[in-house]
Image 1 (cartoon, rainbow, N blue to C red):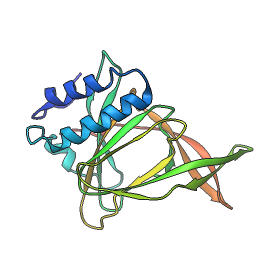
Image 2 (image 1 turned 90 degrees about the vertical axis):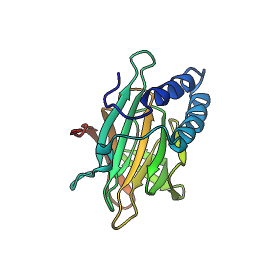
Image 3 (image 1 turned 120 degrees about the vertical axis):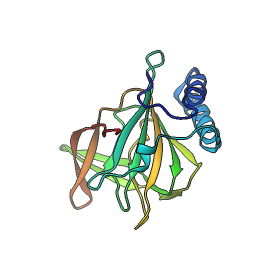
Length: 192
């Protein structure tokens, strides 16, 4: 179901549909990364204007498409200057993320210890991704942070999830390198 009309939407959906027909998560995400890179360089495909409007107090999430047939969802995220996430997961779902506009900084984390309801993570490097680049997360390697490193420009990323991404676990630092997990419900922003 197309949630927002935009030029080239059908071409976008056809490319993603073809990629998700693969057999395993690694193959699907590999095909999706390649497809998303081609989509982002296709001048016939342009995201709706609303995804280039940031929210002042949070990064914006706007659903572009949800596949009734294959179950995946496509969300455009708009990151105002300096906006980002805490360490979080994707509720056990694979995801392919691409930078449509601006730059995004991604820090993947490895869960190295879990004890008494607390979690200890180690960063695994930080990547700076620019327009047209894409990456993937496959559980159990799904813990990460994302942020817009710019002080004055927005960034837009497109996220393709295995299913509807309506909640995730976020990890709040509590001292001595430990975090506690909170469940967060994820809302969609208005598209006017």
